[in-house]
Image 1 (cartoon, rainbow, N blue to C red):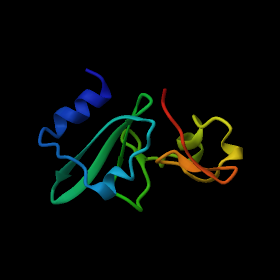
Image 2: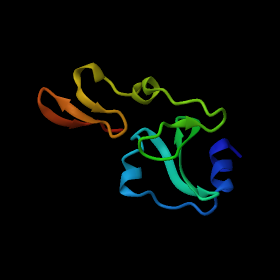
Image 3: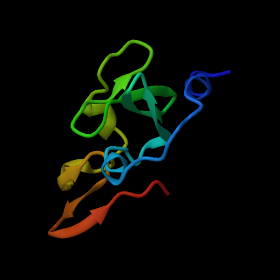
Length: 107
């Protein structure tokens, strides 16, 4: 069983994310869920082959295995030609290119 499967098994009562929480999920996260543990709500996501967690919007993403913070550089590494995008939202993959609204696609 991999780390992501162990995480999901640890939190069998997973819940859907709120709209605000959904905006905290990167387009590059492969899977995600919310769960409550000891009265605190957490978000979990699969990023590449790592399990990460956050206590919600305005809080950083952290690696589950060592609690280290996920760097902005890693969150933006998959964006091609990002230097040409103005106002890049690193989680949603949106911004402006030559004054036009653009959105990155995983396809």
